[in-house]
Image (cartoon, rainbow over all chains, first blue to last red; front, side):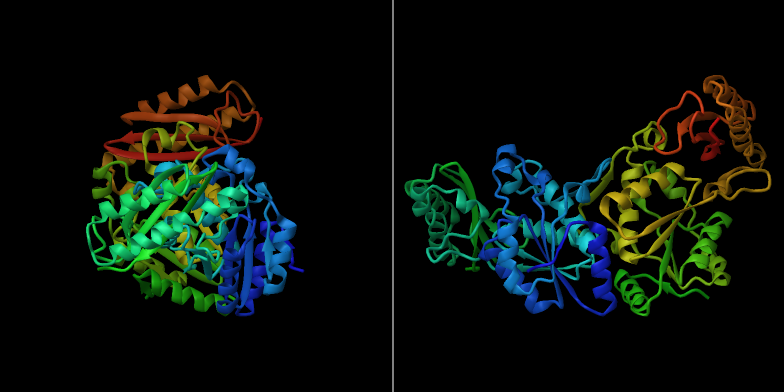
Length: 282
Length: 282
């Protein structure tokens, strides 16, 4: 059993007690529908911090698409069961009013992430992410917070948010967890039809193959075009972006002449999935 | 002598040590050019908290007028001398890069304060205030922060900011300190020419007289018009606003039928001054 807290004041009281006792507090923010990717973040927190809080809040403000919000899986009981064996100290499941109380009217906007990736296809998404992450880090008063590299642009945004607002929380990026066939774990994977599930690994396969070819610093455009074609040939319905970017700030690159990242978003049978891989500099 | 800290990391180290020892930390954010109004905030902090930090930062982002920023008095040595007898534990004087480091690009915007007072005459001012207050409260990790009622709309904004971002800092509003003739203390008063200094009390006198008349709940418009005329008759060059507002949210009121505030901004010899007084409900 994991202890569940639904109120921000109760959360603060519990964490304050831990801190007075000298504990280092780690937090793993999630929207629930937990999978092994989340659990790997929890294990990282468990290994690193004295006390571990997992937050579960499906943040309406980061959904640019109401259908996506409505379809987002809510599985709190199953989530709590998954966390029970991992030594989580507290599962924080705030009601909507604990995050956005009546009269709430403040925005937090992180600049410099308008680089034409998720920001371009999910307008407003990162404003919602910045706001809720700022609030959750402040509410939990965490010393460390753990985020997956699968949401690479989000990880970058969170690092900037924490730096710009001087939040005393260290941000730990954790490697993407994948199925044996390469598909990056995502809460959205469970919405894939069986036939589409078989097609799903093509995205990572194309990214990984392209990353290998780009490592020698060759011109990126033909390699990127071939990767996009491979995804479509595998039966995906569209590719929103598939792009080589500088790892440090996601600026466009013509070749992997410095540490880089290959990032993609694509649609498979009505489900939007994202993935990314590192590209070693040539 | 007051200990001076110029770096946010040094500040955090010092405050962390105090907190580990169980101290309650109070902060008084200022832009320097200290006067008895600031010192009254420091005394309130000293009486209330175990450790007191005064911050001194002339925040460029809250000046909508570059001339006002350039003319703003910088008197750090005199400020430190004024604080020395008051038992201040730390004077935090961050350089610009400690607040806005290279690459800084985040905004914090508090809504619901576009009520046609300071917001209407100083575009962008409160965005700068919200940002720097959020940063200073987070940097200092203060348990309590002390703000003057003279900047009444700012005090309201800070309360909303703290509520909306869940900052663990209690906000304490402190009464306006006045010269014997009623002029509210302000760092801008020292820019008044001698002749204008003699005219300066007319603003508070008009507000106080009007507040007394409004306390019986009579229609506000003629009383407010008379107060504005009295300020102009005293030799002030213009009145930007002079308005009766609900105390809780600064919504316009036709009469003081609930707790209210009478607020004004006006120009005297090239200097913009503000003031406000409480109006008891009729």
